[in-house]
Amino acid sequence: MNISSIVVQTLPKYIEEVVQSLKDCSACDYHIHDEKGRIIITIEGKNVEEELSKLRVVEQIEHVISADMQMAYSEEELNEHMQVLENSDVVPTVLNDDNINPEDIVYSGDLKKKNIQGFAKHFDKIGK
Image 1 (tube, rainbow, N blue to C red):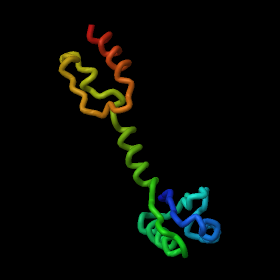
Image 2: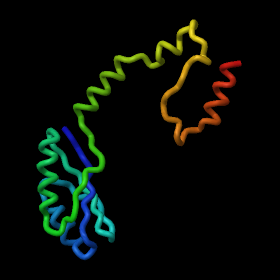
Image 3: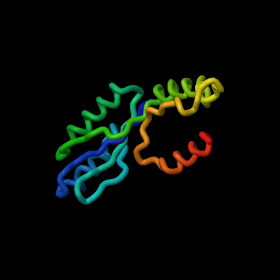
Image 4: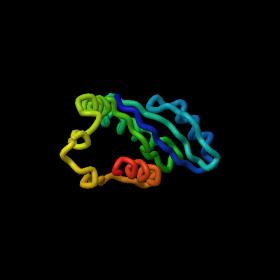
């Protein structure tokens, strides 16, 4: 099962008409809208092809300027990722190897918006 959120855009003067059309449409579920003409809906499908088919139905509603997929959930992908997580070690083996000097470990991830001061203090204590 796939579920996706869609942002539908229309002109403010058509908002009520488009919202009613979306509520009446069996291809989607209406959730919320604002006065600027943005409408949030979700669509469900057994696969991506079915979702895209429903998205095309929404795009054809009169006065819809655009309908763009924002977030997607795929049950199949989730199950695959869960299997990988369940079959992996919680702590990477390199961190449990007493033959490796901690100073030689290089982190190549993303530290944007992370508390790197607390992170650095933690590793200062470990390194001493």
